[in-house]
Amino acid sequence: MALWGNFDNKTASGTIAIAADGAVTGTSTAFTTEARIGDYILVAAEYYQIVTITSDTAAKVRAGIPGATLTAVSAGASYSLTEKPAFVTTESASTSGVHGDVTKVFGVDTNEYAAERDQGTPAGAHSGWVRRVAGSGGRAGRVFTETLVAMGTITGDLEDVVMQDLNINITTQPSAVSVTSPADAVFTVVASTVPSGGTLSYQWQVSTDSGSTWANTVDASGTAATLTVISTDAEYVTGNEFRVLVSATGATTVTSNEVAVTIA
Image 1 (tube, rainbow, N blue to C red):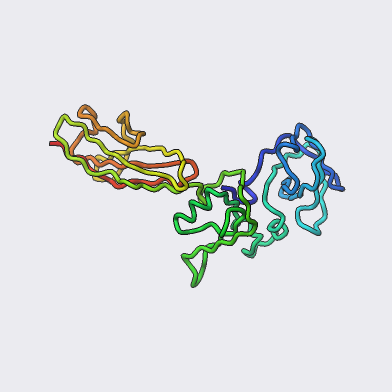
Image 2 (tube, rainbow, N blue to C red; image 1 turned 30 degrees about the vertical axis):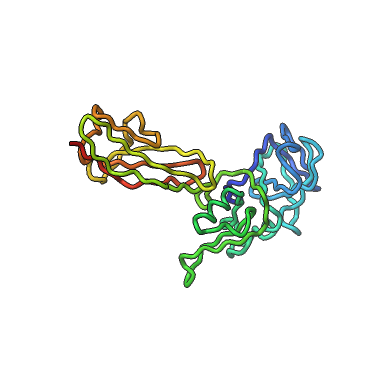
């Protein structure tokens, strides 16, 4: 996910200079592969929109906000490239919470749109650039989303707190286990991602004080979907409780139910 102004930056090699007429001269830059017409160059909190790309080291820009005076930039300036579209950039100076509020506008890709829709908080009507505002006053607790610019794909994906790439669903929770020593105590979780295809990671934890504190299990199978606690493990003790943390890149980690082992 990408949050405008901070995290939707693309790769930006080298340094640049910007002349008063908008001519951009790069040093060790790669404009033809890293940038495209319509992208924005951000230098020292100033936005410049790319209007032409001549080579890896030559381009031309205009002021990021229509009507603003273009500010020249001395050679050797570091910069970033961002994909945020002009529609909102023209209002980006606003702090009133309207479309241009950069703290409320997100780039949402197709995976993120599906994930948000699945959990009942759709990220607008389509993947693309979306404004998301939490309700206040009589609308507190509600979230309002609006698609500003519909797009099939968004790149520069980094931010996954507000808009997740995936949701994790635990479809089968671990169950409490009763065994007769020296039989193994086996706990299993079944989980999946929405959209499907995400790579899940597992971390089983054990509590020896009725769930007050938790520590990662030292068992060799502690990072698999099935935890096997053998009779020689220090954690093979009646009353110990187990749970598993299920995670995936771009998703909020989900914690399973807590279940106990009873050993006869």
